[in-house]
Length: 453
Image (tube, rainbow, N blue to C red; front, side, top):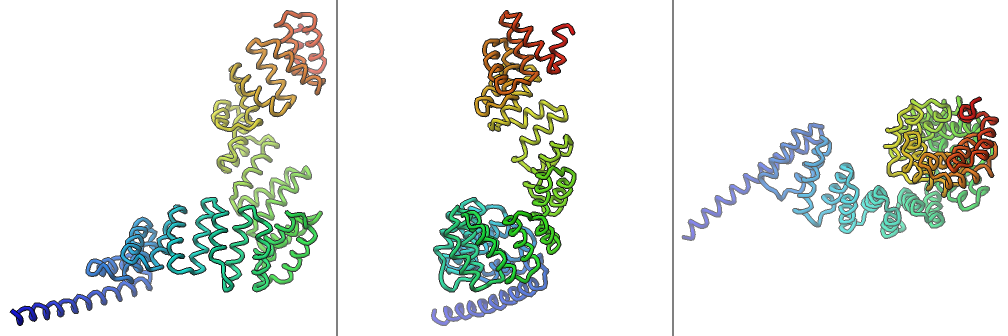
Protein backbone atom coordinates (compact mmCIF):
# COMPACT_ATOMS: atom_id res chain seq x y z
CA UNK A 1 0.00 0.00 0.00
CA UNK A 2 2.76 2.39 0.94
CA UNK A 3 4.84 2.07 -2.19
CA UNK A 4 1.69 2.36 -4.35
CA UNK A 5 0.75 5.57 -2.64
CA UNK A 6 4.27 6.88 -3.05
CA UNK A 7 4.16 6.05 -6.73
CA UNK A 8 0.90 7.92 -7.18
CA UNK A 9 2.35 10.92 -5.39
CA UNK A 10 5.49 10.80 -7.51
CA UNK A 11 3.42 10.72 -10.69
CA UNK A 12 1.48 13.67 -9.37
CA UNK A 13 4.64 15.64 -8.76
CA UNK A 14 5.91 14.93 -12.29
CA UNK A 15 2.57 15.99 -13.78
CA UNK A 16 2.55 19.14 -11.65
CA UNK A 17 6.05 20.08 -12.78
CA UNK A 18 5.06 19.57 -16.41
CA UNK A 19 1.95 21.65 -15.90
CA UNK A 20 3.92 24.46 -14.25
CA UNK A 21 6.44 24.36 -17.08
CA UNK A 22 3.66 24.64 -19.67
CA UNK A 23 1.96 27.48 -17.82
CA UNK A 24 5.23 29.39 -17.60
CA UNK A 25 5.83 29.00 -21.33
CA UNK A 26 2.35 30.30 -22.18
CA UNK A 27 2.74 33.15 -19.72
CA UNK A 28 6.05 34.22 -21.23
CA UNK A 29 4.52 33.98 -24.69
CA UNK A 30 1.58 36.18 -23.65
CA UNK A 31 3.83 38.82 -22.12
CA UNK A 32 6.05 38.87 -25.22
CA UNK A 33 3.04 39.24 -27.54
CA UNK A 34 1.63 42.00 -25.32
CA UNK A 35 4.92 43.94 -25.49
CA UNK A 36 4.98 43.51 -29.29
CA UNK A 37 1.44 44.88 -29.67
CA UNK A 38 -0.01 41.54 -30.84
CA UNK A 39 -2.94 41.94 -28.48
CA UNK A 40 -5.34 39.36 -29.94
CA UNK A 41 -2.64 36.65 -29.81
CA UNK A 42 -1.73 37.77 -26.28
CA UNK A 43 -5.36 37.32 -25.22
CA UNK A 44 -5.30 33.74 -26.50
CA UNK A 45 -2.04 33.01 -24.66
CA UNK A 46 -3.23 34.45 -21.35
CA UNK A 47 -6.54 32.59 -21.63
CA UNK A 48 -4.58 29.37 -22.11
CA UNK A 49 -2.60 30.10 -18.92
CA UNK A 50 -5.82 30.65 -16.98
CA UNK A 51 -7.38 27.51 -18.41
CA UNK A 52 -4.51 25.58 -16.89
CA UNK A 53 -4.11 27.62 -13.69
CA UNK A 54 -6.73 30.23 -12.76
CA UNK A 55 -4.55 31.49 -9.94
CA UNK A 56 -1.92 33.10 -12.17
CA UNK A 57 -1.87 36.80 -11.23
CA UNK A 58 0.18 37.97 -14.22
CA UNK A 59 -2.15 36.20 -16.65
CA UNK A 60 -5.22 37.96 -15.23
CA UNK A 61 -3.42 41.29 -15.44
CA UNK A 62 -2.06 40.70 -18.95
CA UNK A 63 -5.43 39.51 -20.23
CA UNK A 64 -7.19 42.63 -18.95
CA UNK A 65 -4.57 44.96 -20.41
CA UNK A 66 -4.64 43.24 -23.83
CA UNK A 67 -8.45 43.42 -23.96
CA UNK A 68 -8.40 47.13 -23.07
CA UNK A 69 -5.94 47.82 -25.88
CA UNK A 70 -8.19 45.94 -28.29
CA UNK A 71 -11.11 48.12 -27.17
CA UNK A 72 -13.04 45.08 -25.91
CA UNK A 73 -14.11 46.86 -22.76
CA UNK A 74 -16.84 44.53 -21.54
CA UNK A 75 -14.44 41.60 -21.73
CA UNK A 76 -11.77 43.67 -20.00
CA UNK A 77 -14.25 44.59 -17.26
CA UNK A 78 -14.96 40.89 -16.72
CA UNK A 79 -11.24 40.07 -16.67
CA UNK A 80 -10.39 42.67 -14.04
CA UNK A 81 -13.51 41.87 -12.04
CA UNK A 82 -12.35 38.24 -11.93
CA UNK A 83 -8.93 39.43 -10.86
CA UNK A 84 -10.45 41.27 -7.88
CA UNK A 85 -12.29 38.09 -6.89
CA UNK A 86 -9.27 35.82 -7.11
CA UNK A 87 -6.92 38.44 -5.59
CA UNK A 88 -9.17 40.69 -3.45
CA UNK A 89 -6.22 42.15 -1.59
CA UNK A 90 -4.22 43.16 -4.67
CA UNK A 91 -4.27 46.80 -5.72
CA UNK A 92 -3.87 46.25 -9.48
CA UNK A 93 -7.19 44.53 -10.09
CA UNK A 94 -9.31 47.19 -8.40
CA UNK A 95 -7.40 50.10 -9.96
CA UNK A 96 -7.58 48.69 -13.48
CA UNK A 97 -11.24 47.77 -13.06
CA UNK A 98 -11.89 51.42 -12.19
CA UNK A 99 -10.06 52.55 -15.31
CA UNK A 100 -12.21 50.27 -17.47
CA UNK A 101 -15.41 51.54 -15.84
CA UNK A 102 -14.31 55.11 -16.62
CA UNK A 103 -13.82 54.22 -20.28
CA UNK A 104 -17.28 52.65 -20.28
CA UNK A 105 -18.78 55.86 -18.92
CA UNK A 106 -19.72 54.34 -15.57
CA UNK A 107 -18.15 56.86 -13.22
CA UNK A 108 -20.01 55.65 -10.14
CA UNK A 109 -18.71 52.11 -10.42
CA UNK A 110 -15.27 53.46 -11.25
CA UNK A 111 -15.26 55.48 -8.04
CA UNK A 112 -16.13 52.36 -6.03
CA UNK A 113 -13.26 50.43 -7.61
CA UNK A 114 -10.75 53.23 -7.03
CA UNK A 115 -11.89 53.53 -3.41
CA UNK A 116 -11.07 49.86 -2.88
CA UNK A 117 -7.68 50.31 -4.56
CA UNK A 118 -6.87 53.28 -2.31
CA UNK A 119 -7.87 51.29 0.77
CA UNK A 120 -5.38 48.56 -0.21
CA UNK A 121 -2.55 50.92 -1.18
CA UNK A 122 -2.99 54.68 -0.56
CA UNK A 123 -1.19 55.70 -3.73
CA UNK A 124 -1.50 59.15 -5.27
CA UNK A 125 -2.80 57.77 -8.55
CA UNK A 126 -5.64 55.98 -6.76
CA UNK A 127 -6.82 59.11 -4.95
CA UNK A 128 -6.57 61.20 -8.11
CA UNK A 129 -8.52 58.64 -10.13
CA UNK A 130 -11.13 58.27 -7.39
CA UNK A 131 -11.69 62.03 -7.14
CA UNK A 132 -11.74 62.33 -10.95
CA UNK A 133 -14.54 59.76 -11.15
CA UNK A 134 -16.53 61.62 -8.50
CA UNK A 135 -16.08 64.88 -10.41
CA UNK A 136 -17.48 63.19 -13.51
CA UNK A 137 -20.58 62.39 -11.45
CA UNK A 138 -20.86 66.05 -10.43
CA UNK A 139 -19.82 65.28 -6.84
CA UNK A 140 -17.22 67.99 -6.36
CA UNK A 141 -17.46 68.16 -2.56
CA UNK A 142 -16.99 64.38 -2.29
CA UNK A 143 -14.05 64.57 -4.72
CA UNK A 144 -12.38 67.23 -2.60
CA UNK A 145 -12.98 65.18 0.55
CA UNK A 146 -11.27 62.17 -1.04
CA UNK A 147 -8.19 64.22 -1.91
CA UNK A 148 -8.13 65.81 1.53
CA UNK A 149 -8.23 62.33 3.04
CA UNK A 150 -5.26 61.24 0.97
CA UNK A 151 -3.26 64.43 1.47
CA UNK A 152 0.22 64.04 2.90
CA UNK A 153 3.44 66.11 2.75
CA UNK A 154 4.94 64.05 -0.05
CA UNK A 155 2.03 64.53 -2.45
CA UNK A 156 3.02 66.10 -5.77
CA UNK A 157 2.16 69.58 -7.06
CA UNK A 158 -0.27 67.87 -9.47
CA UNK A 159 -2.09 66.38 -6.48
CA UNK A 160 -2.28 69.77 -4.76
CA UNK A 161 -3.62 71.36 -7.94
CA UNK A 162 -6.26 68.64 -8.31
CA UNK A 163 -7.37 69.26 -4.73
CA UNK A 164 -7.59 73.00 -5.38
CA UNK A 165 -9.63 72.39 -8.54
CA UNK A 166 -12.03 70.11 -6.68
CA UNK A 167 -12.46 72.65 -3.88
CA UNK A 168 -13.11 75.38 -6.45
CA UNK A 169 -15.68 73.21 -8.21
CA UNK A 170 -17.34 72.63 -4.83
CA UNK A 171 -17.66 76.39 -4.32
CA UNK A 172 -14.90 76.54 -1.69
CA UNK A 173 -12.71 79.03 -3.51
CA UNK A 174 -10.75 80.40 -0.60
CA UNK A 175 -9.95 76.90 0.67
CA UNK A 176 -8.27 76.23 -2.68
CA UNK A 177 -5.73 79.04 -2.33
CA UNK A 178 -3.26 77.41 0.14
CA UNK A 179 -3.03 74.33 -2.08
CA UNK A 180 -2.38 76.46 -5.15
CA UNK A 181 0.48 78.27 -3.45
CA UNK A 182 1.83 74.94 -2.16
CA UNK A 183 1.88 73.62 -5.73
CA UNK A 184 3.47 76.77 -7.14
CA UNK A 185 6.14 76.96 -4.45
CA UNK A 186 7.37 73.54 -5.57
CA UNK A 187 6.65 73.88 -9.29
CA UNK A 188 6.38 77.54 -10.39
CA UNK A 189 6.07 76.63 -14.07
CA UNK A 190 2.61 75.08 -13.63
CA UNK A 191 0.34 77.42 -15.62
CA UNK A 192 -2.96 75.83 -14.56
CA UNK A 193 -2.23 76.69 -10.93
CA UNK A 194 -1.45 80.35 -11.71
CA UNK A 195 -4.61 80.54 -13.81
CA UNK A 196 -6.88 79.17 -11.09
CA UNK A 197 -5.18 81.31 -8.44
CA UNK A 198 -5.84 84.47 -10.46
CA UNK A 199 -9.41 83.41 -11.10
CA UNK A 200 -10.08 82.86 -7.40
CA UNK A 201 -8.47 86.15 -6.39
CA UNK A 202 -10.51 88.06 -8.97
CA UNK A 203 -13.74 86.39 -7.88
CA UNK A 204 -13.21 87.33 -4.23
CA UNK A 205 -12.66 90.96 -5.21
CA UNK A 206 -8.85 91.09 -5.39
CA UNK A 207 -8.49 91.96 -9.07
CA UNK A 208 -5.23 93.89 -8.68
CA UNK A 209 -3.59 91.03 -6.80
CA UNK A 210 -4.94 88.60 -9.38
CA UNK A 211 -3.30 90.62 -12.14
CA UNK A 212 0.01 90.70 -10.27
CA UNK A 213 -0.06 86.94 -9.79
CA UNK A 214 -0.77 86.38 -13.48
CA UNK A 215 2.23 88.53 -14.33
CA UNK A 216 4.39 86.49 -11.94
CA UNK A 217 3.10 83.38 -13.65
CA UNK A 218 3.98 84.74 -17.08
CA UNK A 219 7.56 85.22 -15.87
CA UNK A 220 7.76 81.71 -14.41
CA UNK A 221 6.02 79.71 -17.18
CA UNK A 222 8.10 78.89 -20.25
CA UNK A 223 5.72 76.64 -22.16
CA UNK A 224 3.95 78.59 -24.98
CA UNK A 225 0.60 76.94 -24.29
CA UNK A 226 0.93 77.76 -20.62
CA UNK A 227 1.76 81.40 -21.41
CA UNK A 228 -1.25 81.52 -23.72
CA UNK A 229 -3.50 80.31 -20.91
CA UNK A 230 -2.23 83.06 -18.61
CA UNK A 231 -2.60 85.74 -21.29
CA UNK A 232 -6.19 84.57 -21.68
CA UNK A 233 -6.73 85.05 -17.94
CA UNK A 234 -4.94 88.40 -17.88
CA UNK A 235 -7.30 89.61 -20.59
CA UNK A 236 -10.22 89.20 -18.21
CA UNK A 237 -8.49 91.53 -15.73
CA UNK A 238 -7.74 94.53 -17.97
CA UNK A 239 -9.82 97.15 -19.79
CA UNK A 240 -8.49 96.37 -23.27
CA UNK A 241 -8.20 92.56 -23.48
CA UNK A 242 -8.17 92.05 -27.25
CA UNK A 243 -4.39 92.42 -27.80
CA UNK A 244 -3.76 89.86 -25.04
CA UNK A 245 -6.23 87.37 -26.47
CA UNK A 246 -4.76 87.77 -29.95
CA UNK A 247 -1.29 87.16 -28.50
CA UNK A 248 -2.62 84.09 -26.70
CA UNK A 249 -3.95 82.70 -29.99
CA UNK A 250 -0.63 83.35 -31.69
CA UNK A 251 1.12 81.30 -28.99
CA UNK A 252 -1.51 78.55 -28.97
CA UNK A 253 -3.65 78.43 -32.13
CA UNK A 254 -5.78 75.68 -30.54
CA UNK A 255 -6.91 77.92 -27.66
CA UNK A 256 -10.51 78.23 -28.76
CA UNK A 257 -11.46 80.17 -25.62
CA UNK A 258 -9.46 83.17 -26.85
CA UNK A 259 -11.27 83.20 -30.19
CA UNK A 260 -14.58 82.81 -28.34
CA UNK A 261 -13.88 85.79 -26.09
CA UNK A 262 -12.78 87.88 -29.07
CA UNK A 263 -16.06 86.99 -30.78
CA UNK A 264 -18.12 87.96 -27.74
CA UNK A 265 -16.19 91.20 -27.46
CA UNK A 266 -16.84 92.10 -31.10
CA UNK A 267 -20.55 91.30 -30.74
CA UNK A 268 -20.80 93.54 -27.68
CA UNK A 269 -19.21 96.31 -29.75
CA UNK A 270 -21.93 95.87 -32.39
CA UNK A 271 -19.63 94.29 -34.99
CA UNK A 272 -21.78 91.30 -35.94
CA UNK A 273 -19.70 90.21 -38.93
CA UNK A 274 -16.38 90.17 -37.06
CA UNK A 275 -18.02 88.62 -34.01
CA UNK A 276 -19.36 85.76 -36.09
CA UNK A 277 -15.96 85.26 -37.71
CA UNK A 278 -14.25 84.81 -34.34
CA UNK A 279 -17.01 82.58 -33.00
CA UNK A 280 -16.80 80.39 -36.09
CA UNK A 281 -13.05 80.07 -35.57
CA UNK A 282 -13.60 79.16 -31.92
CA UNK A 283 -16.17 76.51 -32.81
CA UNK A 284 -13.92 75.00 -35.47
CA UNK A 285 -11.20 74.60 -32.84
CA UNK A 286 -13.24 73.39 -29.86
CA UNK A 287 -16.79 72.32 -30.79
CA UNK A 288 -17.85 73.64 -27.38
CA UNK A 289 -21.61 73.90 -26.64
CA UNK A 290 -21.13 77.37 -25.15
CA UNK A 291 -19.70 78.60 -28.45
CA UNK A 292 -22.54 76.94 -30.36
CA UNK A 293 -25.03 78.83 -28.16
CA UNK A 294 -23.27 82.12 -28.84
CA UNK A 295 -23.31 81.41 -32.58
CA UNK A 296 -27.01 80.55 -32.49
CA UNK A 297 -27.83 83.80 -30.68
CA UNK A 298 -25.71 85.84 -33.10
CA UNK A 299 -27.32 84.26 -36.16
CA UNK A 300 -30.78 84.88 -34.68
CA UNK A 301 -29.84 88.53 -34.34
CA UNK A 302 -28.77 88.49 -37.99
CA UNK A 303 -32.08 86.77 -38.91
CA UNK A 304 -30.14 83.88 -40.41
CA UNK A 305 -32.55 81.30 -39.03
CA UNK A 306 -31.08 78.29 -40.79
CA UNK A 307 -27.65 78.75 -39.19
CA UNK A 308 -29.23 79.73 -35.88
CA UNK A 309 -31.20 76.47 -35.92
CA UNK A 310 -28.09 74.44 -36.78
CA UNK A 311 -25.91 75.79 -33.98
CA UNK A 312 -28.70 75.77 -31.40
CA UNK A 313 -29.22 72.08 -32.16
CA UNK A 314 -25.50 71.39 -31.83
CA UNK A 315 -25.52 73.07 -28.41
CA UNK A 316 -27.65 70.22 -27.07
CA UNK A 317 -30.44 70.65 -24.47
CA UNK A 318 -29.19 74.12 -23.52
CA UNK A 319 -29.96 75.29 -27.04
CA UNK A 320 -33.60 74.16 -27.15
CA UNK A 321 -35.05 77.65 -26.62
CA UNK A 322 -32.87 79.23 -29.30
CA UNK A 323 -33.66 76.32 -31.60
CA UNK A 324 -37.36 76.97 -31.07
CA UNK A 325 -36.88 80.65 -31.92
CA UNK A 326 -35.05 79.66 -35.10
CA UNK A 327 -37.78 77.16 -35.99
CA UNK A 328 -40.33 79.95 -35.57
CA UNK A 329 -38.27 82.14 -37.89
CA UNK A 330 -38.27 79.31 -40.44
CA UNK A 331 -42.06 79.10 -40.22
CA UNK A 332 -42.05 75.72 -38.43
CA UNK A 333 -44.41 76.55 -35.58
CA UNK A 334 -45.33 73.01 -34.59
CA UNK A 335 -41.68 72.04 -34.32
CA UNK A 336 -41.02 75.15 -32.25
CA UNK A 337 -43.84 74.21 -29.88
CA UNK A 338 -42.44 70.72 -29.52
CA UNK A 339 -38.99 72.09 -28.69
CA UNK A 340 -40.47 74.31 -25.97
CA UNK A 341 -42.08 71.42 -24.09
CA UNK A 342 -40.74 71.21 -20.57
CA UNK A 343 -39.05 74.64 -20.63
CA UNK A 344 -40.64 76.83 -17.96
CA UNK A 345 -38.64 80.06 -18.22
CA UNK A 346 -40.70 83.24 -18.75
CA UNK A 347 -39.07 83.75 -22.15
CA UNK A 348 -40.01 80.23 -23.25
CA UNK A 349 -43.57 80.66 -21.99
CA UNK A 350 -43.84 83.95 -23.86
CA UNK A 351 -42.66 82.34 -27.09
CA UNK A 352 -44.92 79.35 -26.58
CA UNK A 353 -47.87 81.66 -25.98
CA UNK A 354 -47.21 83.70 -29.13
CA UNK A 355 -46.94 80.51 -31.20
CA UNK A 356 -50.19 79.15 -29.79
CA UNK A 357 -51.82 82.50 -30.53
CA UNK A 358 -50.68 82.25 -34.15
CA UNK A 359 -52.15 78.73 -34.24
CA UNK A 360 -55.48 80.04 -32.93
CA UNK A 361 -55.26 78.01 -29.70
CA UNK A 362 -56.58 80.79 -27.49
CA UNK A 363 -56.98 79.15 -24.08
CA UNK A 364 -53.55 77.49 -24.22
CA UNK A 365 -52.04 80.80 -25.38
CA UNK A 366 -53.66 82.67 -22.49
CA UNK A 367 -52.29 80.19 -19.93
CA UNK A 368 -48.71 80.50 -21.22
CA UNK A 369 -48.79 84.26 -21.76
CA UNK A 370 -50.43 84.95 -18.40
CA UNK A 371 -47.59 83.15 -16.59
CA UNK A 372 -44.96 84.93 -18.69
CA UNK A 373 -46.54 88.35 -18.18
CA UNK A 374 -46.89 87.93 -14.42
CA UNK A 375 -43.17 87.04 -14.28
CA UNK A 376 -41.86 89.86 -16.51
CA UNK A 377 -44.48 92.55 -17.06
CA UNK A 378 -42.93 92.84 -20.53
CA UNK A 379 -45.12 95.13 -22.73
CA UNK A 380 -44.82 92.90 -25.82
CA UNK A 381 -45.90 89.87 -23.80
CA UNK A 382 -48.77 91.97 -22.49
CA UNK A 383 -49.84 92.82 -26.04
CA UNK A 384 -49.89 89.14 -26.98
CA UNK A 385 -51.78 88.28 -23.79
CA UNK A 386 -54.33 90.97 -24.59
CA UNK A 387 -54.74 89.56 -28.11
CA UNK A 388 -55.19 86.03 -26.72
CA UNK A 389 -57.80 87.27 -24.23
CA UNK A 390 -59.66 88.99 -27.08
CA UNK A 391 -59.52 85.72 -29.05
CA UNK A 392 -61.27 83.83 -26.24
CA UNK A 393 -63.69 86.73 -25.69
CA UNK A 394 -62.44 87.72 -22.23
CA UNK A 395 -62.79 91.36 -23.20
CA UNK A 396 -62.75 92.88 -19.70
CA UNK A 397 -59.49 91.14 -18.77
CA UNK A 398 -58.03 92.12 -22.13
CA UNK A 399 -58.85 95.79 -21.49
CA UNK A 400 -57.12 95.75 -18.08
CA UNK A 401 -53.95 94.17 -19.47
CA UNK A 402 -53.77 96.40 -22.54
CA UNK A 403 -54.33 99.63 -20.58
CA UNK A 404 -51.48 98.57 -18.29
CA UNK A 405 -49.28 98.03 -21.35
CA UNK A 406 -50.23 101.42 -22.82
CA UNK A 407 -49.42 103.16 -19.55
CA UNK A 408 -45.84 101.97 -20.09
CA UNK A 409 -45.72 102.20 -23.88
CA UNK A 410 -48.36 104.55 -25.33
CA UNK A 411 -46.79 104.25 -28.80
CA UNK A 412 -47.71 100.55 -29.22
CA UNK A 413 -49.95 100.31 -32.26
CA UNK A 414 -50.69 96.64 -31.53
CA UNK A 415 -51.83 97.44 -27.99
CA UNK A 416 -54.19 100.19 -29.23
CA UNK A 417 -55.55 97.88 -31.93
CA UNK A 418 -56.28 95.02 -29.54
CA UNK A 419 -57.76 97.45 -27.03
CA UNK A 420 -60.09 98.61 -29.78
CA UNK A 421 -61.20 95.01 -30.40
CA UNK A 422 -61.73 94.46 -26.66
CA UNK A 423 -63.82 97.61 -26.35
CA UNK A 424 -65.91 96.57 -29.36
CA UNK A 425 -66.53 93.26 -27.66
CA UNK A 426 -67.71 95.12 -24.57
CA UNK A 427 -70.10 97.16 -26.72
CA UNK A 428 -68.30 100.46 -26.14
CA UNK A 429 -68.16 101.47 -29.78
CA UNK A 430 -67.13 105.12 -29.41
CA UNK A 431 -64.18 104.24 -27.18
CA UNK A 432 -63.29 101.39 -29.54
CA UNK A 433 -63.20 103.73 -32.52
CA UNK A 434 -60.92 106.15 -30.67
CA UNK A 435 -58.53 103.30 -29.82
CA UNK A 436 -58.58 102.06 -33.41
CA UNK A 437 -57.94 105.55 -34.78
CA UNK A 438 -54.94 105.84 -32.47
CA UNK A 439 -53.68 102.45 -33.71
CA UNK A 440 -54.15 103.54 -37.33
CA UNK A 441 -52.26 106.78 -36.68
CA UNK A 442 -49.38 104.70 -35.31
CA UNK A 443 -49.29 102.59 -38.48
CA UNK A 444 -51.64 99.64 -37.83
CA UNK A 445 -52.94 98.34 -41.17
CA UNK A 446 -55.47 96.13 -39.39
CA UNK A 447 -56.93 99.16 -37.63
CA UNK A 448 -57.17 101.10 -40.91
CA UNK A 449 -58.97 98.17 -42.50
CA UNK A 450 -61.54 98.04 -39.67
CA UNK A 451 -62.10 101.78 -39.90
CA UNK A 452 -62.56 101.52 -43.67
CA UNK A 453 -59.59 103.71 -44.55
